[in-house]
Image 1 (cartoon, rainbow, N blue to C red):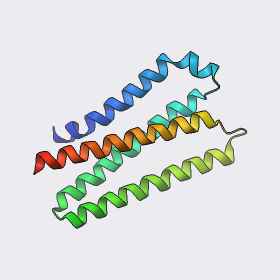
Image 2 (cartoon, one colour):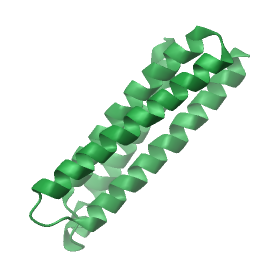
Image 3 (cartoon, rainbow, N blue to C red):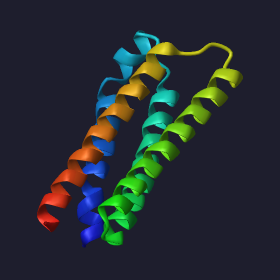
Length: 128
């Protein structure tokens, strides 16, 4: 149950963003957003957040504050490198870069990052 409790906020954000995208789909298309990029970006960032939370969980089990910080930075570097790789591949393969969609995905990343830190702080406070 502990895994699910930690992943529930991230899963909730994923569902919330997808729901908002579905509700606003006509508006987004009219304003030249690429829906495929938005849904794929949200899914990719959700997967990164789940992997990151699993890495943080390993750091929390290590017991040492130094190990937790090491795992936290490891997770951050992995996420940044993978996001850079995906953006680079998109930039090299796309005929035209859809800037509004890329910026929206950056905002998704920010939302997941804030949620991840909030979950970690809350978990650390309850664990003592």
